[in-house]
Structure formats: structure tokens, C-alpha cells
Length: 118
Image (cartoon, rainbow, N blue to C red):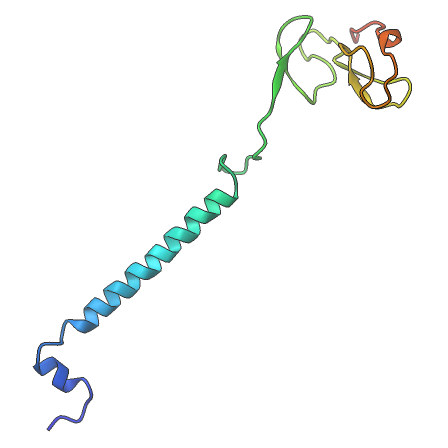
């Protein structure tokens, strides 16, 4: 008589339970890894580029030459038109096309000097 606990199972046809168990275990681990990767992509934002920021760069056009400029530019790189100046009252950056400062409500009509940087 065989003293091992798995011996009788092999005699009656349970020899397939071991490989099926390992196959199901590997499938479950693979599914959990898939869910972790998918939720990581969803958390990092829709733009999942390699090392790029999630915020898109918004662009406008230069009022003088029409070339594309980013919002962070202080002057146009093509024609050197000054896009932003400091408010004379509060000192914050404002666009040259604005009539009043949105921070202190000071009139900006006095600040429209020469808009081209030499």
C-alpha cells in the first residue's frame, strides 16, 4: 500500500489537477498584472508619452506677424514684438493687448509704449 497522500488520486484519474492548478494560478497572476498596468496608465493621464508632461502647450499667434507663440513667451521670437509687459501698478505680467490689469484693475492704456524690443 502506498503511504503518500497523492498516490490514490493518480490511480483514479486526478493526474491532471496539478497542471490545471498551475495554469489557473499563472493566468490569475497575469490578469492581476494586466489590471495594474492598465490602472497605472489611467492614473498617469491620457497623454502617456515617455517623459512628457500631461499639460498641453497652448499656442496663440503673434498680433504683429501672425507666427505661433506659446503663452509663456514674453516676446515673439520672429519679429521681437513684446507680448507681455509688467503692470505699472502691481508689477504682474499682463498682455499688451489688454485694456486693464485683471489683478489690480489699473488702466493699461498708458503702458502701450514701443512694443518692439531691439
